[in-house]
Image (cartoon, rainbow, N blue to C red; front, side, top):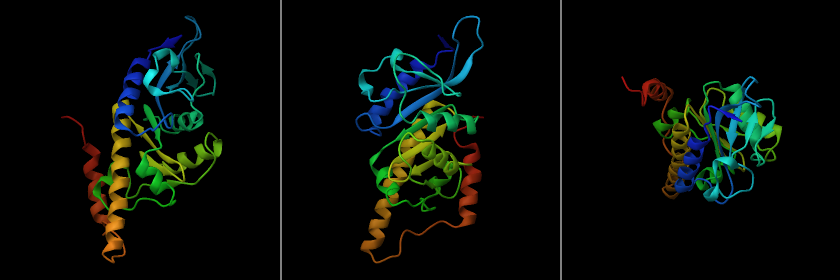
Length: 228
C-alpha cells in the first residue's frame, strides 16, 4: 500500500508534461520520490513512483503508476518505464532530488545526436549547476550502462543531454523538474539556431560567456526563485 501517497501529484504533473509537448507518444518518463509499506506493520520502503512502460499518458490513473524501491523491487499493477534504473540511480546519488524527468524532446534529441555538450552561449546554462550542459555517452536504453553515464554527466548538475537519445533533469519538486526540462529544451533550440545563424554569417559560432561571467551567473542562481 502507498505510504504518503504522491501519485495524485505525479498524475497532475504527467498531464502538464503532455501539454508541454516534451514527450511525443509514449516516449520519456517522469517520477517522484516516495515510499511504500507492504502492510501496516512494515517499515516504509524508500523508492519512487514512475510512469508505466508503453502506455499513453492521457488515460493514466493513479493505479497505473507503479512503485520501484531503491533496491529494484516493483509494486503495482503496471510495469515501470524501461528507464527505471536511470531514475533509481539518480535518486540514490542525489538525495536532494525529489523528481526526475527524462524526455525525447525535439531540440534536445537533435543536439544529443551531435554528442556535444552545450557551451556557455547563454547565462541560463548556469541554472543547471555549471558552465556547460554535459552530454552523457550513448548506451542502449534501459541499461545500467546508460544509467551510469547519465549519473556521471549529472554530477554537480541538474540536467544533461543523453547521446543519440534525449535529456534528463532532476528537480527538488515535480514543478521544478518540469520547468528545468522545458528550460533545457528551449536552450537546445536557441543554441541550435545561434549555430545556424553563425554559419550563415560566416562566424565560427555563438560568442561564449567567459569563466568570470558564468561564475557570477552561478552565484546569482544560488538564490534564484527563493522567497525571503
